[in-house]
Image (cartoon, rainbow, N blue to C red):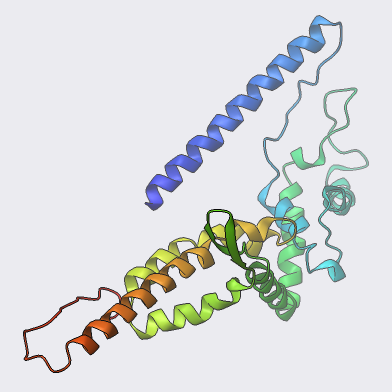
Length: 247
């Protein structure tokens, strides 16, 4: 299943890249056809990883200068890159301004600050991760049950994820635990990069856990009912039920 997900993700990413490359070529042809000078210099398909991490720390790390704004990262890196390249950074294709993210040393400048801040104050970073976990669980997509035009939603179900996991561990339900664990990467963006905006909604682990909890409860109730109905019957007689989840 993980392999299928990886193949689909890689294929979709490449398809989107090819699509936008084609659109860039169309735009350049249109500009040339009207006597303009299109930009033909290097460009980025995506922000670098360290740029995203730097800006993402703007959710709870603003006390150390981080913001969820590209320009803040560019502004931080520019004077440091100027010390490497001299008074002028490498120029882009005139008359266009150079994109500072295209400078090879740019990710390293941001990485150095991030790692130094974490090493100097690990408690600061630990608190950020804990706050992100709280935000993911607190802003998780509500668990809803709909029948026709009627529906019931529970908005705080994310907080029940931990108790459900503890119950499954107690009953050694490794199959269901593995299924829930498979969904953990859906919280990766909010936990490792940025927890603002709608990123907590990417997480679906609590939805899977809710379904597992309902199934487990139903099987447990059925098993108890069968045992109660079989009281007084000789061994081997009466109803039987094998509960896969209850053990």
